[in-house]
Length: 191
Image (cartoon, rainbow, N blue to C red; front, top):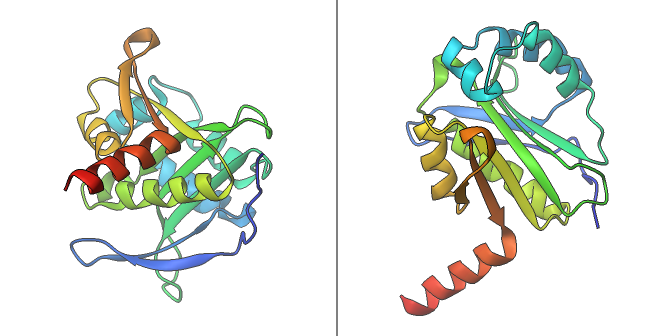
């Protein structure tokens, strides 16, 4: 069922609504230090939203984990400064992980650098990872969001996720690709 990434060196440039441009590409092992720097700059609120609690050594742990993903069950995309801009910086990362390579669904997580919020980068990263999930043959993507993370809840709704109250007072969001396709077809037929 799972189709691994065919072109892990795929990269392209995107422009955000305010005109900022970034390179989007898959995470590489040599991104470890740049990922750690991005995670280390996270605000306390971003840490709480991302981890749903505090974790010691978060930056180093997450950087190491993302730099060495299991390609059969995971994928991660980073938004970086443009090629040729030195030193290269990472502004955001989005990740999907399946429980097992044969699973037909994955859980997502996304984080944008705290000093670069509200520019549309998280939304753009999410659209990229959802395309990746479809290319891998997944049927659904889920996530867990703190109920006070209103930006993430709005973004999930805009992307077509369906929300329900989950365990531990979290909001579980789920995007079933077949349901999304049916909703889009219904809207096109009605309009």
